[in-house]
Image (cartoon, rainbow, N blue to C red; front, side, top):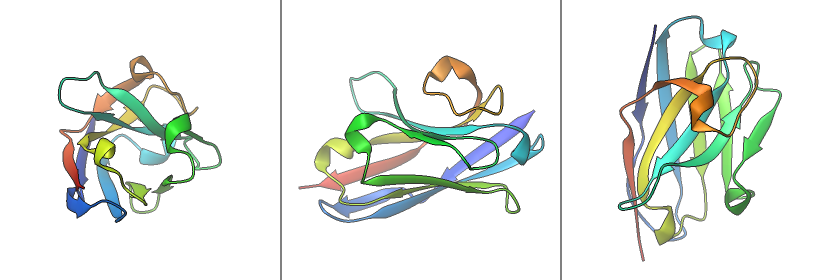
Amino acid sequence: QVQLVESGGGLVQAGGSLRLSCAASGRTFSSYAMGWFRQAPGKEREFVAAISWGGGTTSYADSLKGRFTISRDNAKNTLYLQMNSLKPEDTAVYYCAGGRGRVARISASEYMYWGQGTQVTVSS
């Protein structure tokens, strides 16, 4: 079993930055891929970014490339999402997720562990 706890969300002005963290416990952190997803009010959950078990492969939603960076520190059992040049449309609850395997995937069905989410609000 894996427990995931996100932190780092909050209120930020457009153009600002935030770094989200996801602390993992339970199953060996370095044995599975990780991802970030988000869900805005009235919208479906959408893929943000994913990273392979060792951090060597990353994947991003096309609309977020260049602004968001996913990384992981397996020694600290922690996943990160650096978000720059934030826009009001980035406002959402952000979730970290633990994958079924080692490969970075973009589909939510490939993830079996989910955190409770952290709210990110970007004001205009």
